[in-house]
Length: 296
Image 1 (cartoon, rainbow, N blue to C red):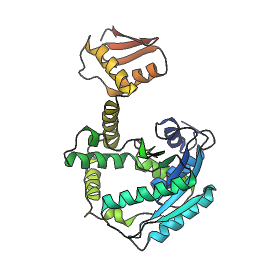
Image 2: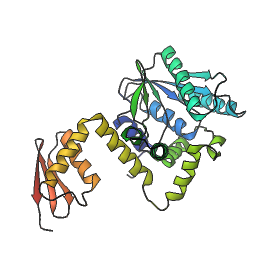
Image 3: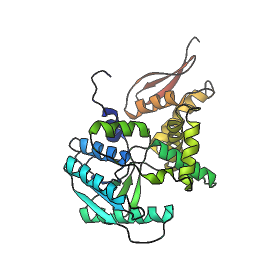
Image 4: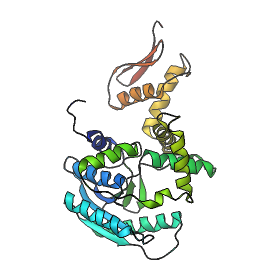
């Protein structure tokens, strides 16, 4: 939209998504990379309308000498935003990815408890979700694994883990971070092909030019599976819409986006007519669904 403020869509995704709730006391896990700097900036930008209390935390893994530079970046970001910041240093221990992740979340949990935070937010994005889903697939995981990372889940009693940007492309987060004028760091470990996640990342980079919207499609599929696992209200509405069309026309070539438009209208209590496919529309009125056949 002409005249729209750069980054407005990033902040709107945070405000309208299920990960961050109004009134949350948010501890942003900031590594100093562009994704977490974008997250810190966006959470701070919407803190007044969403009544958020914001703080940053940096976890020093002590796995590489340049980590102090990342710490300095986080301190600069916190100072620029005018929010509290805490540094947590991990003690020596196993260096594999899973062990480091567990120790990192434990450290973040300790900081959150100390600050009275209700949620720890991370900058995981759509490309990270694609990697997680593929890694789960390669492990032979069931629906829980194929649902990928969830937008919000419990981390420990009284504390949730939130990932607001699972459907946002990393390029958009980088552009938002650049527009903020704040510094960010690049983790050299992302290029280490010996790590399984980095190997998957490289393969996905080769596939993206051949499959437009790859990450968005994977994130959408993961979200659908997650909704089914949770038996969410939205998953039930999707079945209602699809069943209504199936009773008349079958499901061939039924576009997901058309289904979602109808579902969101029902959620809002709206009414209207929604195109489903050629010759078929859906009428929604007072929550009731009816199928309309039209001349093709």
